[in-house]
Length: 156
Image (tube, rainbow, N blue to C red):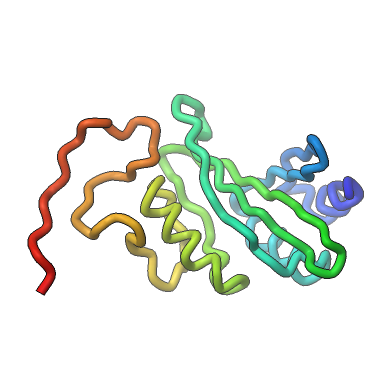
């Protein structure tokens, strides 16, 4: 499926960063500002109609610390594609895809809760796994292991 790499590179040269295909896994890396146009193209023109997963990786110590990873699937052609976006620690912000795929809503909330990556234009970006008073983002590599959290009283 590496021909998709060429189509993305030709159609979006300003957003395309790199691509590779390791062990049958096709992956493209794009710039954050290209997320909406590239993902819209992949969904509407290339047939990647399912957002299977959305997650994040913390590369603590690197300039572009966070990598948001999208796993797409084409139900008709039975193809998979991984799309990655790297974000700086100072500004871990990327556009929401919840208007394209409904399930992105919950995935984005999980990434916000666990890593602190903000999704612009998300309809309800709030914690989904941790309680509202929880301080910090527990899957960041610099999160203190012995950090004490505020206690929450009984829910009435």
